[in-house]
View 1 (cartoon, rainbow, N blue to C red):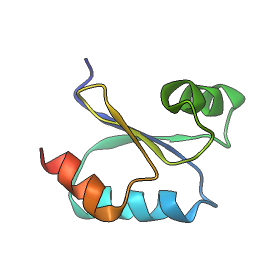
View 2: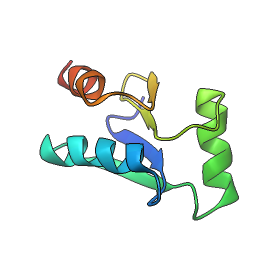
View 3: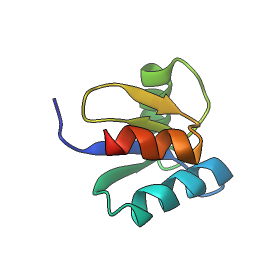
View 4: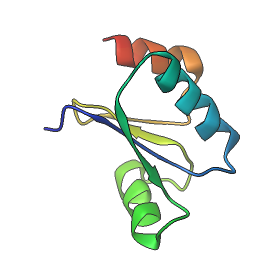
Length: 79
């Protein structure tokens, strides 16, 4: 199990920018994967979530969030 958060997103995605802002404001060290940069990255996000929606945020415990609200993301990273 990885101890880092991984966020799959794209620059054009408003929900992705919002989730990045929450992670950045919380001082969270995370890996950002641009799904526009490669088909493999986009395919990985779909494989994790079963959906084409972004952001897909993979937490250290292996669970993931798709398009979380700010409150939901804050709650999960605080846990």
